[in-house]
Image (tube, rainbow, N blue to C red; front, side, top):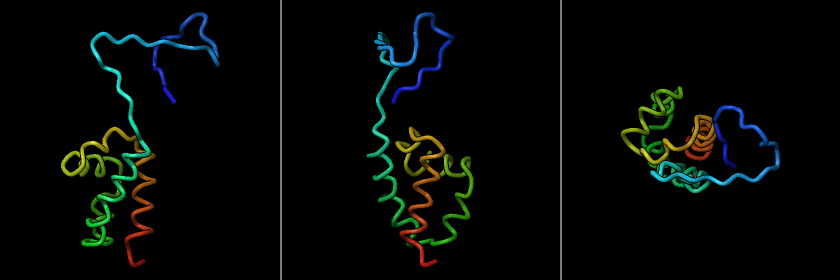
Length: 97
């Protein structure tokens, strides 16, 4: 899925084909499924070591992004909903509660 944020484009309707040309190479594809899986695996040892303390320290999206900036910057390509999903999975899989 590609989301394009741009002014309204005349003649573009749902289902139309688009071709992107980026001469300065600013566009990149994000393999969010792979990054989510790798992030979940990365979190395993952090969560096992700290348990609930880890989740208290990374409770909101700002705290998560700050933590990811230091520990796993590749995951910053994901949006906050993806982070929330991975954090919930990690809590379910790796805590004793």
